[in-house]
Length: 374
Image (cartoon, rainbow, N blue to C red):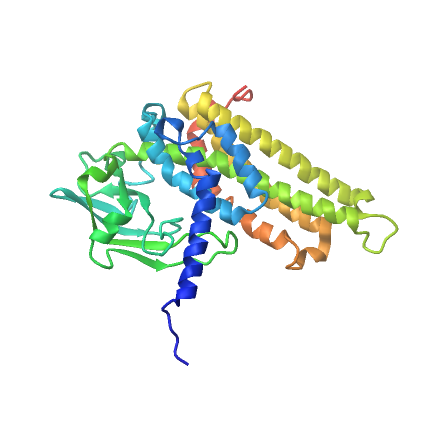
């Protein structure tokens, strides 16, 4: 039987209607505009407000939420540079991006005439495929120039803007989706493996010139570290609610509901306390990162702590919730497998806790203060 990949008029109508609905609802809800500061025409608020939004959305549907919030991460370099905040984020942490003794970033930019020539590959490039796998409307591409002005690693790092119009001006294959990565959780989110092959963009597309990109990248991920804390709280909350509801309605053929049994109550209490502690840490980290006190490296310590502690706690909390429910949690009709699949990525994405985030905490060891940001 031949397969026709051309859409019929009815199928095309359905596609357009669905696309219009999705775009219309997203625009009407202001979820993307809410990640842009008012000075740039958006409606974004404080970082604390962002953590509240992230928690509420992650408690309901993590995968669709990540699609929205990953767009916010991509917009963060634009927000930071456009509102003139670069100064407070200067840390000169470029070595892990472009090391003297290691390859560093594999995506490079070479100036040729009035253009930059972009080549390299990225994986887990959330949303970069766009709706049609031909490229997103706007990409913030972190890369390293092939002709830095000094041997200092940070001086090679830059950020280029790539638009869908730029991609269409290039030859076919200059931008390519190598594959769509299938993931255990966040299954509605696209994090493809993408490749640039001599993709040409105008010189004016430089968002962060060489020498300024590393600070902006690091600052962007400091902000997102706090938000991963909020994601963790949302997932913990969802796991607690599901386990509590089960414990109230099921008695496992016993004389009383599970909730009245000490072992179950202890597990639920532990989840609740962890959730409250993580929420408090996340809010404090958000406030401290944005408002102080202290210089920037001191302020970011709590952001790193929020990402590490909350994401690690999340996997433990979901496992405790599974133990409350028992074998019924293994039923795919229950939410626990999905929650665990979401939770397992929180410690390892957005800068893994072992490879990145704890390493970034190391410079703060000499300044550790038991009072913290109080």
